[in-house]
Amino acid sequence: MTLREILVVERQGHDNASVLAVTGWLANAFNAFVRGLCVYAAPDPTIAECFAIGDRPMRAVSDHLDRQRDESVVPVETGFRATLTEAGASGDWARIDSGAAVDTGPLRARLVDLVVLPRPAGDDHASLRLVESFLSDGGTPCLLVPEAIDLPVSFDRILLAWNGSREAKRALDAALPLLARAAAVQVVMVGEPTESEAQGHIDALAARLARHGITIDARHHPRGHTAQQILESCRTFDADLLVLGAYGQSRTTEAILGGVTRTVLLNAPVPVLMDR
Image (cartoon, rainbow, N blue to C red; front, side):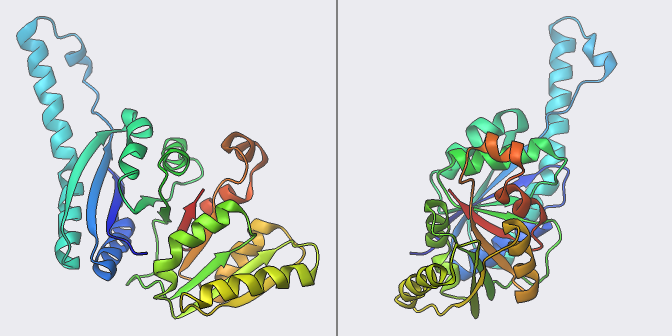
């Protein structure tokens, strides 16, 4: 299992340096083809342009808005191309209107091995909805990258949050190429009813990963808030990547209850690899 094709989602008007740094590292490490997708907001006409009447004036307004749109995404494409050059990778680039991104963006995810996305801020509902659409409808693992990360990128210390669920298993499978390259892998379990049951899970997981040449260190926290324990484990282990199963419940339920996935997603100090 490896990564041969990556989709990186960039946002017009935002700082895309972190997602590009991670994408460049992945492209170089796995010799992957990279597809760039810029999500842009269509420019609004001025008040005067709203009153344009007749074919020629309306065509002039349309042409002006098209030029504004084209100019606004130039820096995004330039940054993407520079990342490919530095990584020695090949790829292509496209743009998509933010109004269509939630519906059509995930369709592009189904043809790649990994999607790299900027992590949304808690009050950025549009970006959060976009991320949720990729997680729920894309069918492909997603790597969520905070705006501020340590550079250069090096996923040497990986924390795996494990509860034995289907989602955790899918996230683990997605992470195998990265786990195999890591210098240290720690597994954290939170809230199993007994120590012996938790140890049984850990032993079985360790045996499976050992067959892939991966050695793990494990930590069990029988009590405590799951999200906070995972976040604290990221810090104490000095992780540079967190692997986590996403949305064990419905997205609506998790949004209402402030679920583990959302809390970790919005607060993790490192990139988070998720699948569901």
